[in-house]
Figure 1 (cartoon, rainbow, N blue to C red):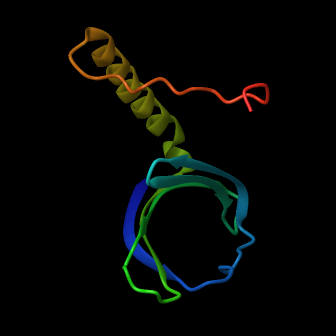
Figure 2: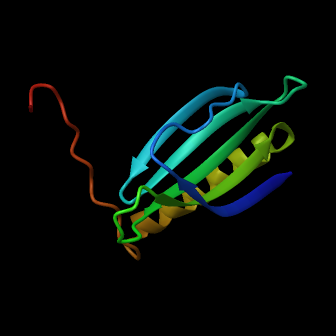
Length: 117
């Protein structure tokens, strides 16, 4: 079972409440968006994954409010393999389409090294 949740989140300056159900978290910055891959546990000690896309919204005023638009997917253990298969198939198709020359490939990223700094 996969659940999709979309909502706006408003945070005032300071820390959000921390929860004890988080086992692992990976943050990926991608342009104007940030993605979070969070492995969490249930009370029954089962694992599940949340994938969150977060985009900061600028409201133009000088208030302490920072607004984020978030979209979240909840992925449960019984669907991990199906999700992985679907993601692999979709990314494989994208790769094939790029190689066909019909669609633009992303620009290669330049890797930063300490020597380059």
